[in-house]
Image 1 (spheres, rainbow, N blue to C red):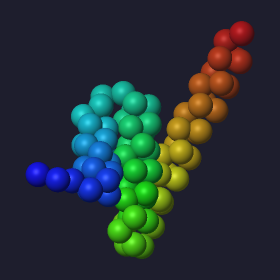
Image 2: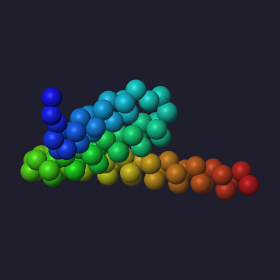
Image 3: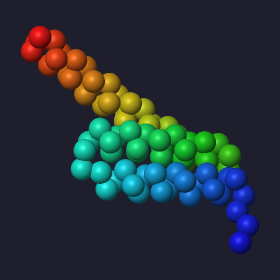
Image 4: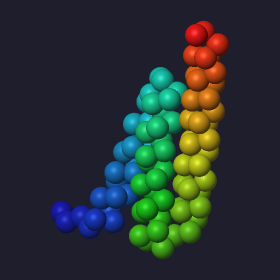
Length: 82
């Protein structure tokens, strides 16, 4: 069974998203989901599918936004405790 690099990219993206959904820690979930979405975005570009690119690019941006919000909240909490 021969797989092309594009197929492997698609499977890797699917696996990362699936693994991310098993995480209890929201930060790990968002990081792994971001990686999966980034891989899916690359996969979408490789297969020339703009719906895949747009959807996963948007979800990746949402993950980054919330990770940054959590980081800011963590930094503010650390500063107030110092």
